[in-house]
Length: 154
Image 1: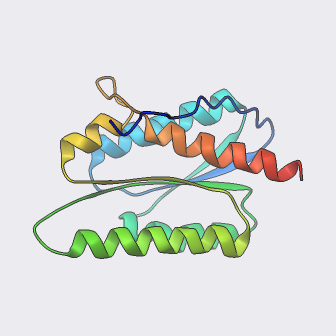
Image 2: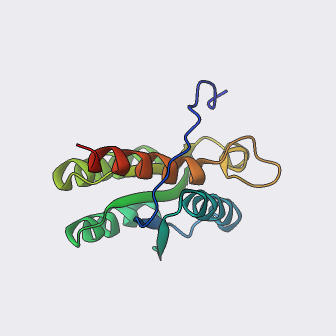
């Protein structure tokens, strides 16, 4: 199971702002990811600015724009489900590389909440819904905020 070994993150980020960039494909899954992200931010004391973009591919340019504007922390949420063509591989690679580049070039913590799955059922299991086994939206926010807090302490 993919959640094995996950850390328990309890971050206090009072006064921080986290930008959450969320794709719109796969509405039910995305609604769960966004809800989890909002819950995690509220629990940590952070304020959320939510920005929606069409798909996972478009999250990269939005994260770049937010980083250039001085974002303290960014969580990116999306879903890419394997299909019958190589499209899945190209999108997953481009998004992962693009978001890594944004984080490194701007020194901004980026929580990676883009589900790259073989089936919709796998995504539903990770979406933070009532019947889900994991909450990747919350995990992405917690990771970005915990890293932002650590960076503040340097």
